[in-house]
Image (tube, rainbow, N blue to C red; front, side, top):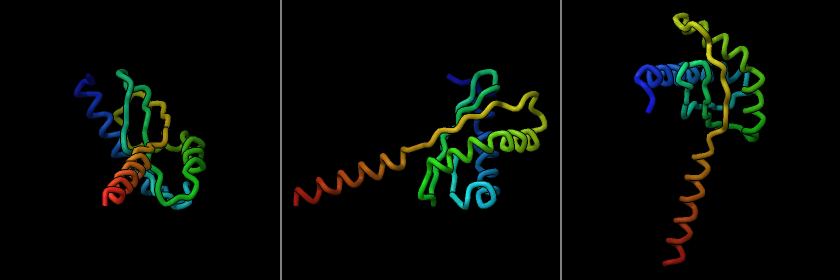
Length: 117
């Protein structure tokens, strides 16, 4: 169970990263719509693993690669927004595919419902 401090930090990082992706989407990521769906931090707040959903892009893997290439600039922006941090955390990003899973399950249920009729 995460401490209150870690939970607050994760929420703040999720908010800051979401705002950053919204502001820089056109310049950095070709207009892809990127949402931060989950943030998990190490107990010492030195490392963050972010799950991102990538929409409005034909090649989400390429956008994820662009995010990895821009990780230095992202960290600098996080440091600028959070001057109270002693150390800016290391960032890693993974693609959140839960929306794809939900769509697949809905299609499966719809096909089962159609077979019943």
